[in-house]
Length: 229
Image (tube, rainbow, N blue to C red; front, side, top):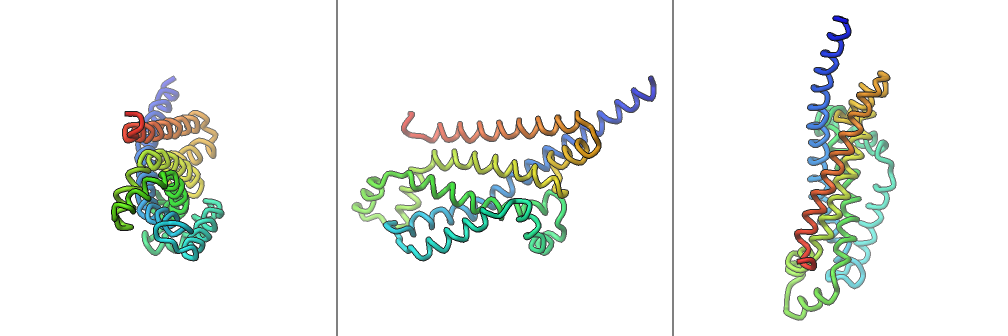
């Protein structure tokens, strides 16, 4: 009985350490890579819209080249992106393992997706609003920053929820090759060791974080939507 109790206490302490570290590492990877992906993806999405045929800065060749690059990167499975990006990761971080190292391949994989999400949101803006801004003498930059982006804000926030939760899923998948976070603990301490409790605790925590992030962005989108005020 004493042995069983000691084992139970040790497991509880181990679980506490893993869950605290796992949650912080998962949020760190997800939010840091999301930030980098949006720094790249927002300008990319804007260019894909405004440079399209009939756009305010029409440049079809540029749009076609960028669109092709985006589609090519998006077509590569995420685990292969991690492998391909390893030289870059080692150059920047000094290692290809750990939560910090995984931010780079996560951002590389997510940026094209974010670009497409932003593009889709911006295309929902009513062309009449853009034409009205043109007739008032607004410059292209003013139309982008003061008309298109504000009008697309609710859709952009919904898209951000989709993008961030997708990146969360990528971060869990990256646990297979030593990324850290809940996915890594679920695989290494749960699946590989036959500990079903550890496996399901981490899975449930990932689901909870997913739901919280999604709900936060949906609430923000609802608050920013002028049509429901």
